[in-house]
Amino acid sequence: MTFRRTILKGLGSILPLGLLGGSAVRARETPAKAPGRDYYRELGVKPFINAAGAYSALGGARMRPQVTDAMRYAATRKVKMRELHDAVGKRIAELVGSEAAMVTSGATAAMVLGTAACMTLGDEEKMRQLPDTTGIRNEIIIQKKHRYTYDRALTVAGGRLIEVESEEDVRRALNARTAMMFFLKPTPIGDNIPADQYVTLARELGVPSFCDAATTTPPGSNVVAGVSDGFDLICYSGGKGLRGPYSAGLLLGREHLVRYARQNGAPNDISIGRGMKVSSEEYLGMLVALETSLGISEEADFAYKRERFSHIIDQIADLPGVTARVFVSGSETNELYLDIDWDTGIIKLDRQQFIDALRAETPAVEVRLLLFSGGRIHLSATVMDDGQDVIAGQVIRKVLLEHS
Image 1 (cartoon, rainbow, N blue to C red):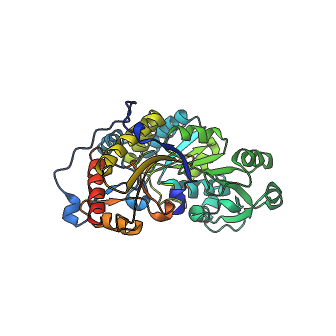
Image 2 (spheres, rainbow, N blue to C red):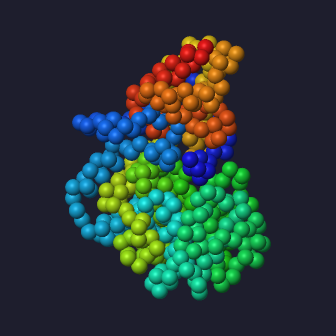
């Protein structure tokens, strides 16, 4: 579990429990048909109910049925990969309003390929040379507040990070070795130079700007909004808020830079990204995930999640000393969470013990790690199927009662 995938900036508006069961249009889904074989049982792997969220360590988000249908379609119909990449990229670019787009093997791969594109600018000799950057511009300007776990991806192709804290620092840092200006959205500690000012400055200085916006969905409309910010390149995780393939992502932006990024990726055998392959199933799945996400409003998404939370609350509402509330995170994604608390004088259980007890149950239930929830017990409905909410509530009730 890592920092980038878990950014929240505090608690936003609290939703009264009375609003949970409203009649708004819901992002209703049909559960996938169960396979004939229980593969995980055969392998001795224990499934769990994910009430934590779409984290990589927990398998990412649950793909929507439309996405899995598209992937099954692609799995049985072979086409030429370059043609499919071209067609999918064109469609995605049209959907979000960017000059060009490509599907990548995750947001981190998008960062590697985008950085390599800005360093080599389509020069095949330089592409062959990476990660050796002798004679290649490789300096990447990054705000000190934007340093994070995944900025290592900027160095994979040979990039060197140059920290700045002000516009004056950027101007002083600029030289013939500068390849790119990087921006992280969002950060938990703000910006010294906000996005609009950073983009304007990059344009003035003639330096490509790159934004990692991987964690800024849902809603899907945030992708369109991100593109409109004007960064030359911007990337998103496909297997999180967009609920596409676990190992897919998006790189969007200027036509020439996306083209150079493609040159630095598979199936080009001289590229540093040769191993970052994207399958036909992922190309199509990512496209359909984006199409579907753009068709679901934040209100419909929230209505679905409120209903899941109401079913959990129904299971524990009568327990003495237990309280539950739904709130909107104060982050760019406006994610919805359920906060559960109890009087430790009545229920002899601290929060970590509660998390450990849920993991020991069958089925197990995962909630957000205390590190990322400010020490509170927070549940997410992003990854839960219809019916799993009731079971999760029953497991939570069982654990609380056992320690009352």
